[in-house]
Image 1 (cartoon, helix red, strand yellow):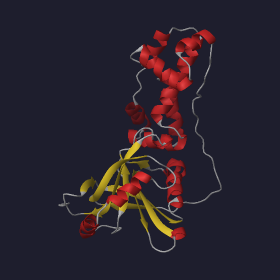
Image 2: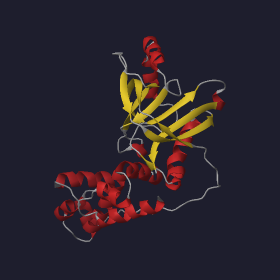
Image 3: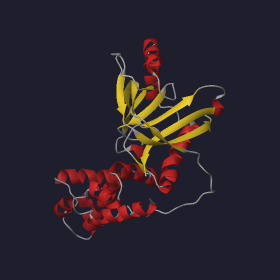
Image 4: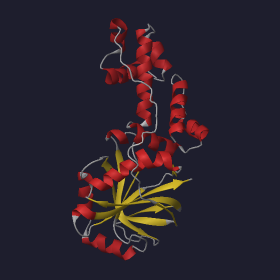
Length: 285
């Protein structure tokens, strides 16, 4: 996977001043566009869209310093208007293009290179499971992306669930883990900078159809799932496991992401420092 990410960077560099198709890049590399975007973001620490934008603006800065006109540079890097380019360039650099031309101000954003960083050989427990099609039934809401600590928007969603809704979900559940779980999907492109939003669902897994008007349903197709059990202080250990999956496991596992909700659940039994959780991500070989 590391090699493919470096090939992606090469592809981006070759197409910075022309229309860039991530779908075409993914096809060349033999990956899905979803897998490519998500893996790049987690390993690079910046979304793929923002990386491309920053590289184009850095090259635009270089071209302006070298004497090209604002008009030529703007259209060369895909901007439809001078106003749009000037606004984006100022947000990125802190200067107007005309100031860069006049004062030869230079700001860089180097291309990325990926490599394997071996850190102590700590193993991750996981298993691969084939799960039949099922439904997620519960309540959902668009919430801000947050990596650490308790997400207040999700907490409010939890608190909004009525006793009647809890009883209805309890009647429907007939699929492991036979308890409430969390599912996240429809991530914004700004995920890695905690600037975007996602859709978060709190509910149960079931093979039954939802006939309750106060509950929502999301269909989950049959997939192969990588399941990561973890135990420890909640939510710290669960959040650390999420990070390791994308930064350490995926790049070396040989598996590819499949576009599907990311699912997790925690058994709130016993001491908070020893709570058991699982994370499910849909994958293919």
